[in-house]
Amino acid sequence: MESSKRNKTKVIKIGKVKIGGQNLVAVQSMTKTATTDVKGTVAQIKRLENAGCEIIRVAVPDQQSVLCLAKIKKQIRIPLVADIHFHWQLALEAIEQGVDKIRINPGNMNKENLQAIITAAKKKNIPIRLGVNSGSLRKAGKHGGGDKADEMVASLIDYVRFFERAKFRNIVVSLKATDVPTTIKAYRLAAERLDYPLHLGITEAGPAETGIIKSSVGIGALLAEGIGDTIRVSLTAAPEEEVTVAYAILQSLGLRQRFPEIISCPTCARARIDIIGLANKLRAEIGSVPASKWKLPLKIAVMGCVVNGPGEAREADIGIAGGKGEGLFFSNGKAIRKVAESKLLDTLVKALSRYRKP
Image 1 (cartoon, rainbow, N blue to C red):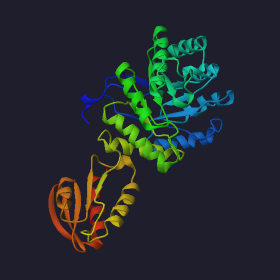
Image 2: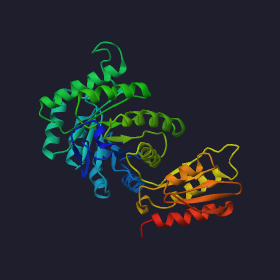
Image 3: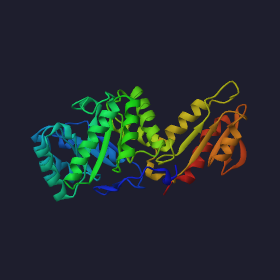
């Protein structure tokens, strides 16, 4: 995607990560451990760091949790965000603990308490994410119309204007619903009316099988329109899977590439070699190599016949076009040689070695 097509937003700094403007769309996740379990939480964050997570959020439901934040932050490399609802005092303590950002739903707090949070965040120069979720929307119908997306945006605008009147503009915003159409509409409306970075997600998207689809459709549709500065895929699954899916969404739109891209045909009666088995083995081989070790971008074509095979393989960095019990091997746009089916995987793996960093 051309950078000029990105929706124009302010640049906000979260720790060492900049979002908004023309910065890369950042990938976030949230821990699923008890925050009081410092060892377990740190271990999970380190796994997420290795998976490519760039910003991590932890829930802070009580005083015991907030007092663990400084210990956690000292042991991780990526920015730490404290997720706080209802208890404004916990927000103040989280800021003192040194978090890089706090996330609140202003509807859960009164204006006096919000002002105290604003003052503390100003002092430490950290951003605040103002998050409105469909499930925790307060005063439904206050703005008329009864449309959930309209209500969400109207509420968010009220909160943003309150923060602006307090001369606080170090803001990130989000409007997450559990269904895709509401989420898309809400973010489109917000993008028209606000210039703050937008954090995208489908909240409570569900188990991996269905949640991946909902998140990919909703987040992908918005990103394709240039809307969104940071994303979190919310799955009832391991957080590492959230990060993997997030990068897959970004890679499918040409916004980021973390792993080599495999182009492979779905196969049909024309395929005379085992394309499904070959593609899966190649994917496993690529997945066994850390993302940081690849020279990117890199496209690999695994094609089954002469219809689209030669064209796709020629346009990829490396690829094969299948024949009867063999495949034609391509490299850098040129047909190199025919390879027996039993040697195709080895040939592709050997060619891949040229694209691995020392």
